[in-house]
Figure 1: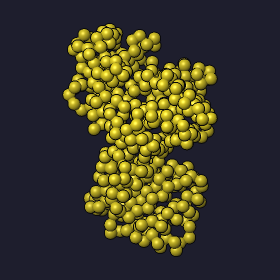
Figure 2: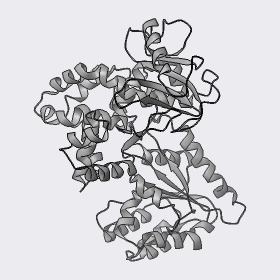
Figure 3: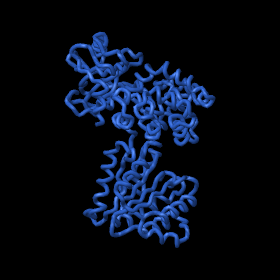
Figure 4: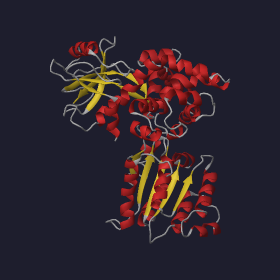
Length: 473
C-alpha cells in the first residue's frame, strides 16, 4: 500500500489514452499527447508517477527548473541518459543539445518502436517562457516522429492560463493533445484519506483545500482543532508555507493584484469594498486586477440567479485553502514565527463559525450539482444563490434550468451549517418569506434545507453532510 488515494477518474483517462498507444490506433499513428493542468501542489506530478508505476512502461520523466534554456536542455539530456528507456545509454555519447529541435531528435532516437513508452515534461510553462521556439519544436517533433511511435507524451503545468492557451487556435500544438484538469482531492477523498466522518471531512476540506501535501501531514482521524494546534506550532508546516509559495509563484511582479486578492480573502465581496480595502485603488486598477485574478482562476465571479438580469457581481477566492490562508494564516505568520501560534489558533476559533458558514456555500452548491439521485427537481441544471444590493433577501441556494438568467427556478434552499442546531420551523418560515421575494418563484416552488445537524422542520426536503458526501462517491 503506497498511500495513494482517489484520482480514479484521472487514472482512468490516462489509461484510455494509453489504449491506442498499445493497439496502434486506427490512423497508423499510435502516439498520443495529454496536457495536464492544475493548481500548484494539487498532485499532478504524483498522479503521473502513480500511473507510471502502475503501467510499468519504460519512460523518461523530466522536470524543468526554469533557470535558463541551457540549464533545462542539459537537465533534459541528463535525465534522458539515466532513464529506463531501452536505448537511453546511447545519449551519453552525444554532446549536450543546444536547441529543443536537437533535444527532441535525441529523444526520438532513444524511444522504443516496438512497445509503448511514456515521456513526461513537467513544469512545461518554464520551457515555453525560456524559449519562444519550444512550442514549434515540440509540434514538429510530434508531427514528424513522436506521433508515429507507440508513445504517450504527458505535458504538465501549474500555470493554468498558459496551459489552456497551448491548445488554442493559432498555437503550434493546437488540437494535438487531450486536455486534462487535475482538481484538488474532493471531500469524499479527504474523508477516506483521513478516516473522518462526513461533517468533519468538510471542515478538513475547507482548511486544506484538498491539497495532498497538507493532508499527508494531517494525523489519521485527528479533529480540525487537533491538526491546527499541531500545524500552527511549526512555521514550516505545509499548511503555512503552501499559501505563500502559491502567491509568490502566481504573482511574482503583480503586487497590486495580490493586494486585491488579499482584500477578497479578508471577506470583501463587492467591487467598491474591494477597492476600498485594497487601499482606495481607482476603479480602473481594481478592474484590471480582478480580470487578472479571474483569468488565473484565483477568483470566482458570482451573479445572483433568478429570472431577472442583475449586475450585482460578487467576488470570492476560488480555492478553499487559499481562502483560509488569506483569512487567518497569512496575517498570523509573524506571530507563528515568534512561537505564538496559540494566538492565531484562538483567532480562528473565534471566527470559525461565521467564516465556515460562508466558505462552505460554494462547496455545497457543487455537491448538490453533482448529486445524481432523484431528490432534486429534474430540470435543475445550475445551482447558485440570490442577493440584492442590500442583502434583503440573501438566499443561499437557488436551483434553475440555466444561468445567469433562468427561465425556471426549480428550488429555493437554505444552508444551516452549525453543530447541534438543526434547521427548524423558524428557519423554514424565513425561507418561505425569502422565496416570495425571489423573481421567478411562487408558492409551489420546492424548498430545500441543507443542515449540518439535520432538520426538525415539517414538510421540507433536507440533506445532511452524509448525503452531500455521496456526490463525489
